[in-house]
Length: 141
Image (tube, rainbow, N blue to C red; front, side, top):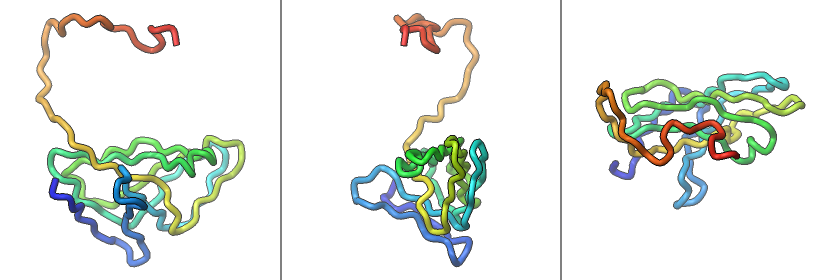
């Protein structure tokens, strides 16, 4: 990756993603519109921005701790390198109170991560490991 992420403003009111500190992992994504979510309600928050994720990378839309503290949790959030549409943020209100997000508020962060894209191949054996098929609490925690 060249160190530059091409971004396109799809709406004149959109705020382009920013990084608060040079060594922050994520770019802050900003909401384009006001939204209020009732307890248990989810919504797709628009950003008004598109990005050109580089080949060999993926964009991951992740929580901001300030919203998570209020009970707002992002869901999904994989942006493939070939996608050029608007970045959206799916948010669920896990709190017991209505939660509002204001236009221009930071609603999530975008991490751009290098990935491997191996070709899937069916096989009869996967090879043994100490863990094996243990999962979902198999270690007792």
